[in-house]
Picture 1 (cartoon, helix red, strand yellow):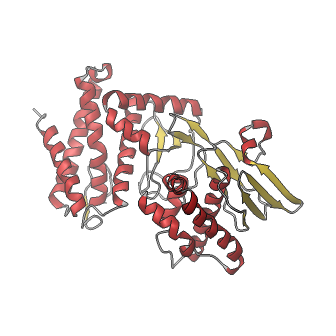
Picture 2 (picture 1 turned 180 degrees about the horizontal axis):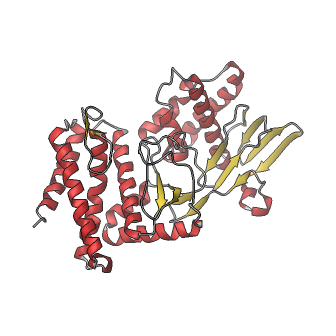
Picture 3 (picture 1 turned 45 degrees about the vertical axis):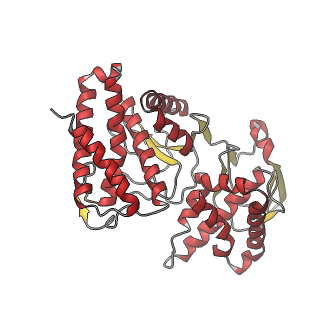
Length: 384
């Protein structure tokens, strides 16, 4: 969050903008300055949200070969922050934006505003949004949009509560959502897979309850850290989940009929979020991305960074199986459960061997690898 706050404060000077956007950019700069002067806690809340944080992190990477992408990201972020501040009654003066993204989102207000094609500009003010259209201006009170009858058709309520702090997201502004490293998957477009949102929520609650019963500390971390689960389809045979280093607080999941598979996926992707948060501060391996090594969980050769991610994600999954077995959980009595537990231990050991043998940890990464070694020794001692 400290890094995000520093980047948000530097943002007005760093964002690319054209001569035509001069006035709106300066209004945005004044809004950011006022935010830090009067409500620094609110600024921290903004950068913590994945709807803002992902855009901030994507803007870090220079794009000299594609300056249009930098402009698009800058416009997305300006509009997103203006919409968030309008909903919080925290804009000292209106901000009018002519170059608009496809949509703006608010997790706290549970709103997604998709700008109609004929909107020429949008003016954001505390508690209000005005759309400039060919036939004139339309001003809306944001608070009124909580009423289904008062909400226009281009505004939706995209978030469905799973827990008080975690939501199923039916809208996503992550610029990287269609970028996919897994060879068996093409992007992460929102898809309920023909299932009802209530079925998704019920399954995820059941998975989280299982984590709470057997890994309560991890469950508390999930409450603290995760904001959004983005649904990306249903599959009875395999589970393909994802997360992005830039989109901290968001995980992408497919729905699977097996509760243990779903619970594994939640732990797995949350663990990736934890490691990605560490990487916000420092690298973990000096040789993270070259050369490539065989991965115990992927068909394609992976850099050590990828193998580290896998083991770091599967070791807490092994701990869940261990705790459920020790507690005599009914699911743990089945042969399939115990076969899966043994398989996870083998995967973890194979991956840990690769990382521990070849990884050159940084000072920050050294403690992480020492912990990985302790758990590898722990499960190795359980083998007959």
